[in-house]
Length: 386
Ligand code: AMP
Image 1: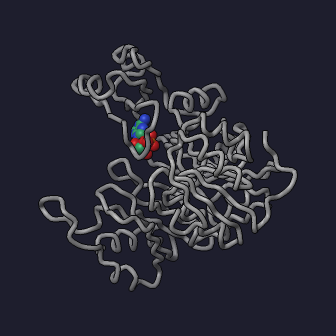
Image 2 (image 1 turned 45 degrees about the vertical axis):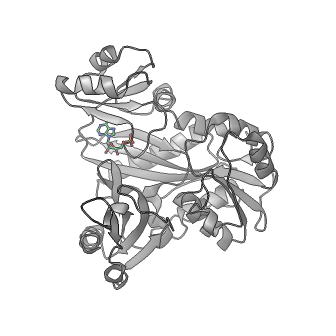
């Protein structure tokens, strides 16, 4: 356990493994507080590197490059979940790693994550695990159809998933997942999806940001609506679960917890992400403290910031689909930024990615309004005009 005795104060260096948009927004928050930020990312020209003091491009398996990186940092965190665990152990032997590598090891593999939820008594969808050379049909029989088959490793945004709605889908599942370890989950006919971003400091203080209601399209988050339009009991259950999970994991840092809300109002944990979360981007524009500043505070041993919501808000992801594409799939034009920027209740965040691709997260915008319904109406209208 790495509870720092002393805070890592502004002027010190924060290392970030992964150079995507989460690292970029972390770098914005950290540099505003006077920290230096170093980014470690295999691919050159990454979104976070563009706003950091230093960008190191080397593979995660390059232990010598990682050691050099770690030695220059007072604390290292990660913005990317699929960092292999051996390099993390290496870093942990050289400098403070927050959250601890064990938290990432639990969350980055669906089998371990589900088992951890079950062993610790957290509510979740029924599931079965099937080894790489295991019997998929037996797993499907155990869970029952409909269900969702997911690869145990490297899954996010619905990648590596297949819904099995009837017996007719079984052969497709067999083909898609041949030779891979999978988790088979009961299909949850949820009323809605919500998520929490929870922060826990080295001195065990916990703060949970207002719960977001999430609407997905093609398995990718499309809208986060805050306050979530669900009964107060549901909000309370989600908040309590997020807090308990952070405590049980001995989290030091920030974590996203995704939930399914069932038709009867039960709250099931879907997924854990021990880093900032897409559904928490609204906090930059609509909370007293953003999730990224909270991450800096938590990993540096500073007091956590207030999570007060300043306005009802909706966050809208901008995917590469919003660019103009011709029939051959060539990108032929930008979204209509003018229309968006002309709105008085919009803030636009672009991640500086050079190449748009359908399904790729290129940026987001937030819309504030008098209430959540109104913000959601505006958000849909503005997105359609992009
Ligand atoms: P995940 O990558 O596991 O977060 O899944 C992405 C999205 O797929 C979720 O946010 C849900 O919309 C949907 N999904 C995943 N698992 C299930 C499930 N067991 N039942 C119903 N929908 C699911």
